Length: 170
Length: 303
Image (cartoon, rainbow over all chains, first blue to last red; front, side, top):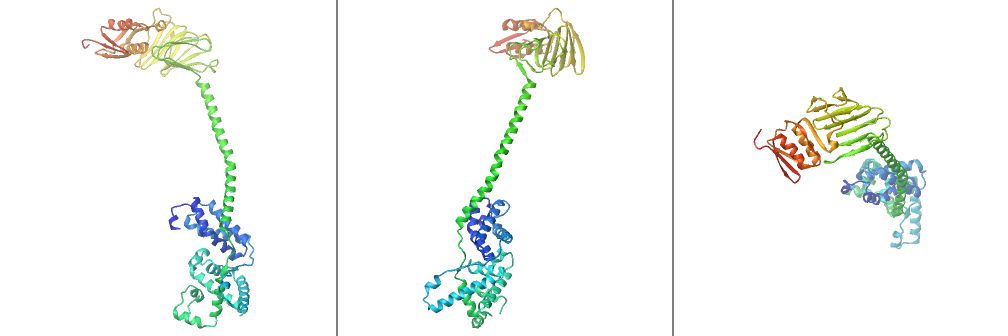
């Protein structure tokens, strides 16, 4: 983004670049929070449309946090939280030759994990998934959520603790 | 174990000792299992190109709304500007009205809407409004003209120097650089000069040369001599005579050792250049040299 400092988000090229680098994560962020794919897609569109309308007022380096804030605010008003449904890549299963018992166990474990993820507080789930799926560093998640890195570490720690307690039935 | 050690563990930020301790704990296997499973998780599909093109369409829609309004606004602006221009143009043409001008060595007769006559001498210009003529007989003059005014309402001639008003008469007005002349040939003419009004009966004149007012009576003429293609002067400084000569013959005049303030009484022809040159030079005791469109008047000895 540093090379775009002199540019304006109103320029088609800059705008397209901002979309390319952030749209997917904005989508995931909203999805992890509310679990509604369609609404998350709408939120991405709305957020980017708002960015376009205000392109002259938003500096390129501020575009990222602007997008997350707008998408989140829009979603809070319209989205009723639903269950988050995530897919598991099956490559892990193919690569190993496990016993049928083990495969079954693993399947059961994933069902438990899904349940546990859905029962997490929204901010812990979002942090956990942004870190695990989107490979976002704590610092980046802190920027998105507008909190300190320490707070994100806390959420991550608590997320893991809660997941384990739910799965192990403790 | 430090705060948020689970977060630190995922970020490889635990010390070796902490890591060893954590690995021996009973929860370690559970956490490792959760992380292994979580690492195979995938978010729902997001076709960014599709969303982007949808976004572009919506941008176009919002932009179209703006565009729809603009042509009308633009049209109104153009229409308003055109209307103002037309109106101003109409007004301008109506008030300024007619304009008649003569070049050097040219003379022109104009008949006004009420059959009053104007004869314009060389290098002169009049403007008047044809449309408003019946309500106000007014002419702006720059130069020299002879007027034969039909009887009727007040007839006025406005110049930079002064204003001449009459009812029905024949008169001559000259307004050139440093000279303002009014000759009345018939009836009564009122001359307003520098706020002072002077009544001019038939056969008299009002002349201002270089700011000095001179008035005297005419002899026999019933119209200015230039109407008959002759320029006459009575006690006129020589420079004005030469200026008139330039205008009538469209010629460039230069002088050498000639006293330009000396008064000249006499006349010269406006059609015959040779005769005119003699009429000017002989009585004044000077000589001339004619060369194409230039003439030099000179005295052999300094006066």
